[in-house]
Length: 215
Image (cartoon, rainbow, N blue to C red; front, top):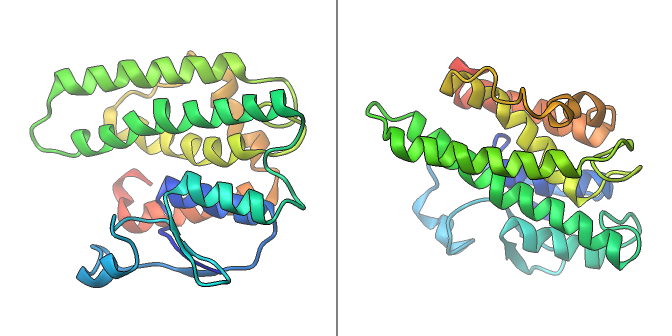
């Protein structure tokens, strides 16, 4: 398999996390920045991640790639348990992607502009805090976010927790996670797994290369 991804991209990091958890071999390909014009020959959306399967199928969109990997390589599941448990994992992952990562990515864009739209920024922070609150309430006291083994939810949450540090610096909100002690402390526990420690280090290298002022 081949994976087009970038080290700092949280969507790419999520897919790499699933691949690492399942211990699946793949060839990483880092496309240049900005994307070359012919990258549309690989994916019409011109964004990463993109997985080229062993049979030559091209898959894009992080959640779809993860579903394929779970279905095709079930030996090490990232959606373990009974239907209820799998639904709770999917729910946590969905909230993380849409309610935290979504506004966080928009905030990085708006906060980087010379003239800032403060009304939009505050609305996005309101949505971000709502998502963080939901995730915080759903954290368990088990080894990972909601299980004793790493799951699809952790594959989203580790890149998200990483991004909170540069977001703090960019926004000047050093107290961003004060109301979410479980999520704030989450990385220290999750990074004990070699897959997530690798993800964290890859994203750290990507941040130093792409946004050194926030590293």
